[in-house]
Length: 479
Image (cartoon, rainbow, N blue to C red; front, side):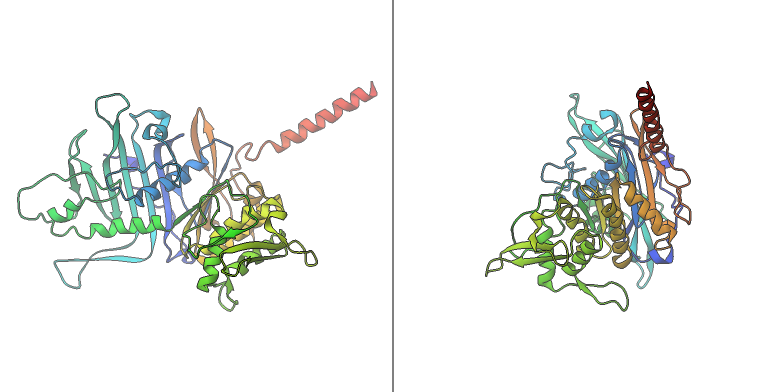
């Protein structure tokens, strides 16, 4: 069984009316994953940002979400966790690689909660027009252990317990006994057993699914599929962009496909722009504001950020299969290919495009979106994220090293562009080899009340050291 404090997270934070009616991750916690012994509850807001030094565990939170997503999307229902390969969103190696301290005796705990865009109602099959359960929040908790097959290091991960919470009810599958692959269905809700000899249930499907036998053994268990479906729909709306993005090209080929996202390295960004153009999609910017195409929105942001003056994707062949990206750096400058301007343009292009290409209500996972960008553009990037959040209900979870991005988010809280509860900011650090998480306390004026020591380096220490060095040089000059 899960430890008492892992039973289910009490949600200390309720959404404001501005956040209502959206599919959104609200809480995440995990234990014994990579450098984290225990994250504790992580509140996830419309904008959630993790800051900290290298190797402090920032990326692990994103990797955990990617692990859940790629497992949910795997066709193998017997695989508890899809740890990935070089073609996956995250290639995490083996179970021993991801478990804390590489100790196979550690149990991997994961708990994730999310809100629904509208209430989920589950009908009572025994009474017409009656509702069994109704709610707009779901929580999934799972505990995974390594089951050895007799040889050290050989075995497989198995689900020790899986549990959903919905509408003040819990629905769990728990191992019948230690090291057993037979499971019990546990709930205070009374499941009605079908006639016939009672049997134990087989293991869960993946880490979150009730096996088909549950619906065969119990007459009123068909609604459990709705909970699984809600989790799979949540994962389908998670999109990821990695920190290492592709170099720009002098020409791009497009065969008419509509990509789901930008790709891990932003390699499908031009495909996305062209697909959106072909479909005639127009983006809403709020009531009374003229709609824009995706290409127009991206071009406007690139101009507002001071990177370029104009941006166009044009065909270079009659059949429309080859394209080039042309930009103009200033109003009177000649147009040039994107390869002939600063590297930052091609690096931020997938970030901006994903914010407006992903379906409304999506969750974006961004690793170092500010990479290769000038400090002024890093600050402006925060405004891109805020705009996507406000106009398209996009949730953004990012990890960053950028003080400039953080400062702009603080400013947007201070000037009331966003509310303090719309941004959850964290500082990651390491203590004795373990990752630690500090929630940053932000007041109504955007001030961080618990600024960690050496958050972005020791600025005062650097100034003091420079002053000392100046004095030493002057003394030598006098001598």
